[in-house]
Length: 203
Image (tube, rainbow, N blue to C red; front, side, top):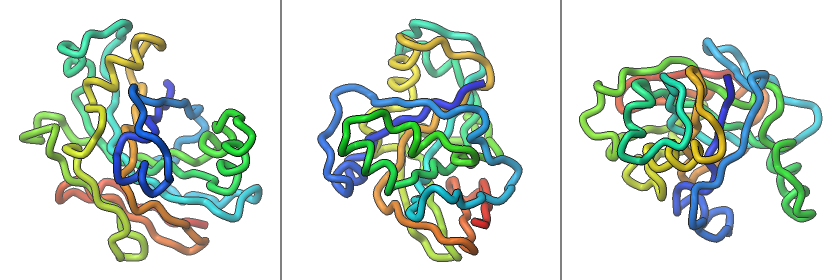
């Protein structure tokens, strides 16, 4: 199982980072050890003092696929979840400055929070799904799939040109604006439409 994450997929987030809009989906990988599941806590690593949350829609791949055409991409997933892509923003700033790979700031242990998934058929329109993140019961992020630069199907088709997708692979589809710092003791709660999808305490 692998975790594939899409960066720079919401214009609002691109603007808050001061980046350029990509022509194609930008993706990177996290290892399986990055997973934080079953509402377990996230343990603040000692190598950073600026960990940020990024709430993201997550899809789980349900069959083997390579060189998938966009028109068939919808058949490669039937569940949708919500997760957090934790980022060591201080480390990321350093690697960006030196044009180095950014996995060290993204792929560390526990950095991919995900809990439950909902059947895809539960959503009337996959291009109009609302999701949000609350920190200590205060709304900090809010997004809708209508604002994605690249749709779920476009993402799957693009990734599969380079990497074979396997059953159980997770794709984090990008975050909207509103990213921010977490501190030890914070409580994070992700909501997909009206469903609470995860709760995560920072320790």
